[in-house]
Length: 536
Image 1 (cartoon, rainbow, N blue to C red):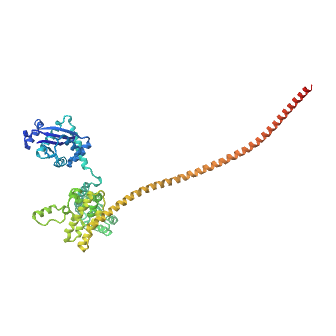
Image 2: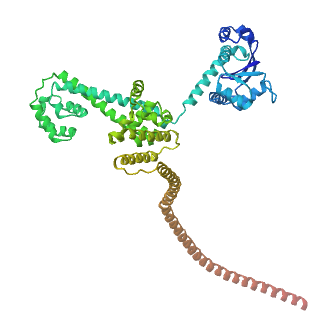
Image 3: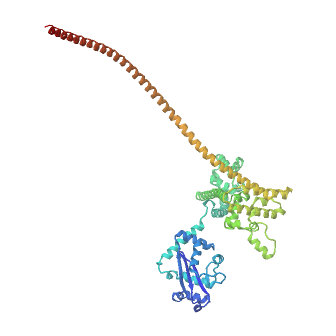
């Protein structure tokens, strides 16, 4: 039976045929010895077909599908074109060697090509990977390494892609740092107490809080300089005037030894460091609360930010915590006690990190185990909602917290709690109502913005437009006045012109009369002359 090998390289798919396997033998050790020798290995394994990827994006998609055990359309067409065709109802006379068993099962299911993957096939593929650049002639030296590097970077980048606001790694680092800061601040403050007690031993009994003790030590410095003037500043730190006066009185009658100025400076510097660490711890806690509300809002509202962050860090990530069943989540943090109980066949632990929740402390001794089991159940539900929900909301966490409160009342007073189905239905309804409200608010805000813009435009127009309209009216009035003036001037000129015209007409008529009279005289003279001629 012929054996074909499918090799997925960074530059494309390659199909090899293994011939003359009897020369090497089906022994993996013999194959392993022959892999290093190219002359011997090249006689056995020969290149049948090679299909390069179209682009880097295509290579990334092919790589993702192969890693998930899925056969793409390109791989299917490549195999169907280059492998011998199998007649219907007959067994194939060849088999396809594949590195990934999941991919082989998917290929055999969809194309009915028999696939195998074992140590023998893996050794052959290892030899192909070792001498791959020698099998392809057109491949230049260094091209394969560049393709491998680029595909590896893009594949890793695609796998690491995530929502920046939901990075649970930041929560894991923050809770680890918070725990170490608590230990460090506690040990440093004890060192401040022990160091400054040589100078002012009575202050330890008056001020119990470590942070306040460091602030008071920083303020007092030398006990011999304590006076009534320090009472207001001490009351600001301690919050109690009686305690401040007590500190001043104790400083006057203190039994401690005197310290040199250099020693006091070192004590003050160390106290300042402790104060800075305590303030940084507060800021880090606020940061952790905000990150938990972004990443796991339901888990934080159910069990608290610190306990929820400890559960996430112990599980490794939020997805790992969501995959854990409630029984595993219940004993997270108590693995040593669990395995010790399994070895000694004793009682297994009832709770791990969940014990730090306030619900376990509020339950009675006989109900602590029940309460831990019930709380672990609700925590697993909340973590799954936070991990796989598209939108972050605290509705489910609040409803689950109400259920835990009701279960506490049931254990203490016997009040029957609500059913889980009813609570989840109400939570889903409330989330849907919130979504509809958000959808309604968004168009309302958009319309309000548009109306505001229109109003602002209309308000701007009257302010400027009013002035422009007044100016226009004034211009119109001026124009009217000018027209009236022009009309009056024209009318007056018309009158004067009319008088002049009448005078001119009269003059013209007189001239015409004169002309007529002259003409008449001339005609009369001509008639008289004619009569005289006729008479003669």
